[in-house]
Length: 368
Image (cartoon, rainbow, N blue to C red; front, side):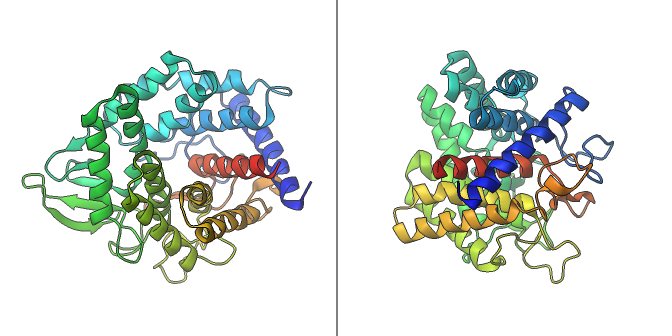
């Protein structure tokens, strides 16, 4: 076993201990971020978008370790069923996060059409957010708002369109990607967090941010959502424009991030108080690993795969992985939820843990 394989295996063993502690100590609880390393607290949520990441981690534990030492599949099914009612939730733009990580993994394992129908209905529900004037899926904030985050959710609409042969669903998903590409991705491959549109005319008005340093800066997690999300869009459509956008975002990430692979919360903020945003790095690692399989350029594939491994090699060290931090309840330290609001700053965050384990699982599976 190589040194990297040893680290990855150790990481999954540690993740199993942390996840068992979470579900046994706080049963049926869906955390978002830690406070001083503890999941259970009364801090603000801002929006309800993370309930799929716990079930998603449990499905990953089942995939990698099986159920020899713990009933991971039973728990994964349980925590997935707890969120099924949200397949008709029209208040958020995050149904891909909720159901791709849970019910899609469940269906991939079983082929059960009833499980698949939950994924389809979630995609159909998300498509109801589409604004014909402007050609975008509106964010949870308001009608005039389009978030870069939605690129991580639009795949579930493409999936529902394919499963039901619904051309209108396909049009909605495709047009949202084109609009996001045009107005939220910049020429250098950086991204804006939010675009604002005139709801009367559909005219694009300006780029803004909720979680970045400035309206014209590049918030790291948002760029990683685009990197991963446009890759997903390309996997469905084979539209070369989406691959080009994913690669532009990947190149920006690699060019502007330290060699060890972990960015700050925003690349434009000089001397940030918290120099690391590990959840962005985890998303980038998983997105780059996927992109290596999608690009038709062998040199690009090697670059993306090697850089993904570099990121994970860093994140599996005790500086980032909490394996040597007694009492810490998360898996991946130094994540960031919402710095402006002071939420989950330099803590573990559920999406960070989920995409970290997804990347670790993918690399570990290929290395065996």
